[in-house]
Image (cartoon, rainbow, N blue to C red; front, side, top):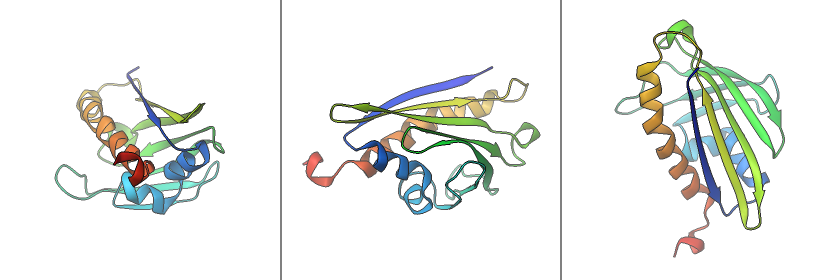
Length: 143
């Protein structure tokens, strides 16, 4: 089973970070171009990207874990993945003295055909987390 794990420390409260990870308008600020999301356990999540390298199909999934301000995870995919399954993405939020640590764990299905997707996500997740950090960091904190 292939897993990508990353961490990000941000100067934002867990409540703020959780909203950025689960609310549609927040997701559109840092993660995707358009999001449809029911932020609750079992709720639908649909993510659309456009531009170079984007797939024409939206990612469609469900929230499989939803612990307010602590952790959330979604599963899903689209027809471009083997069996339509992109795996599971888990976000865990750990309080820090001056903010929150975001732990990301993307677990891929244990089947053939995922090597190109894993390589793509190894490059994409760090870029996404940089955008999340910029979204959550107040402008005055960066000047």
